[in-house]
Image (cartoon, rainbow, N blue to C red; front, side, top):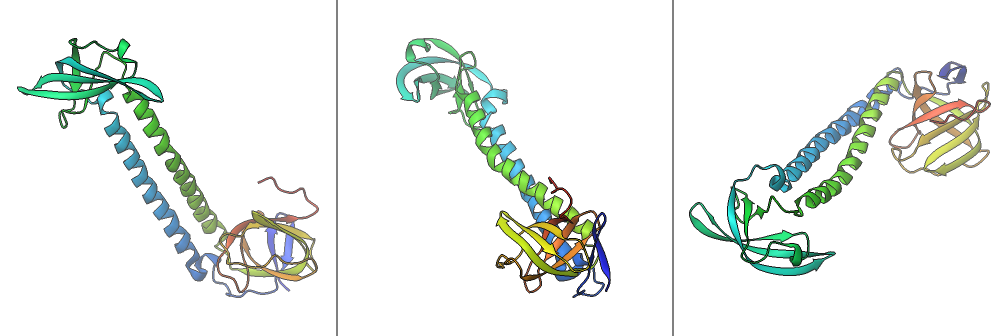
Amino acid sequence: MSTVLVAPGLELPVSGTPFGETPAQDVDNLRRRVARKARIAVIVLVILAGAAIGIVWHVGQPLWGNWPRVEAVVVSQREFVAKYTNCDLGLSSIIDGQPHRSHVTFGDPCSQAPPIGAVVAMAYSPDDPGWVRLPQYRNSESFTVFIVGFWLAIPLAGWTLLTVLAIRRFRWVSRLGVVPWQEVTGTVRSASLIGVMGLEMSVEGAPDVGIRFGVRGISFFPVPTEGSTFTLRLAGDGSGKVLVSLPGHWGESLGRIWPVVARLPTS
């Protein structure tokens, strides 16, 4: 019976080669599937990042848009509370020779705002003259940019992590999947499923082994019971990292395998 080196110093007898010498990455278009997922993840990340930058750039125009300025007269005040006390100022100005009325939120009580009748410098958006700010006073634009950036960063960070994992999976499949799938059969000594599948198996003619692999990429299967016979399909480079699949079940996952006499790997 032939053997396969799955980890340093650990060779296991091979009970079957279901796909002959076909590399594991070519079975069921494995490499193409993970490459497509990684490519889609990168494209979506670029789109999300571009959209986030565009939104923050737009929201922050009052801060870095180099808006033109005119003089405006404060014509009204209205105090309101939105978590903090703010003051809505009504402003009257002349823009492009036309009288214009606009409003701006002053981030303090009206007692600290420019009084009615005061003349202030007002910056306005060339594309929307109703969008204005008072450069010499504290406004809410910086806080708005911060809040918008913060909430956009959460999904962007999440998708970045998914993209990194997709690329990492593609790299491992490309590295480990150059060899064919080989089946290893043993008797289950213990099994647990807490996020990942953890197994200890006795394999005839080899040291007892431990293996840990994710189950999300593999179609549902019951947790094997102690004393049952269990068959795994493995493909690896002898480093202890392996691709794992199960006969009769769709999908595959990444895993680690080691002799149980060795210390449990930490990663």
